[in-house]
Image (cartoon, rainbow, N blue to C red):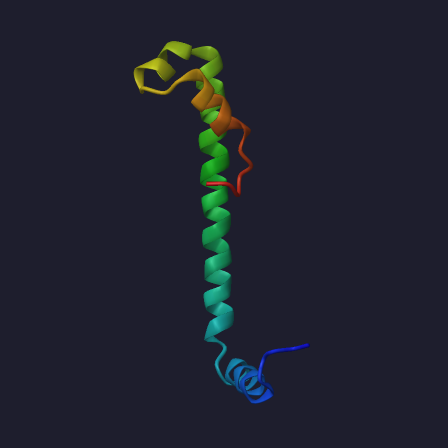
Length: 79
C-alpha cells in the first residue's frame, strides 16, 4: 500500500518541472560525494604506502598498527 498522498506527489512533480535548480544542486552534491570518495581513497592509499615503507611514522602520529589496518581496509564510501 502506498502511503504517499497523491496531491503531495503531484505537487512535487510540478515543482521539479518548474524549477531546474534541484537538478543542478543534485549534480553539485554528486560532485561533492565523488570528491570526498577520491580524497578518502588517496588518503588510504598514502597511509598504506607509509605504513609499509616507514612504519615509525605511523607511531609518530599516534596510531596503532591495528587502527591503520582498519582504516586501510575501509571502502572509499565509508567514513
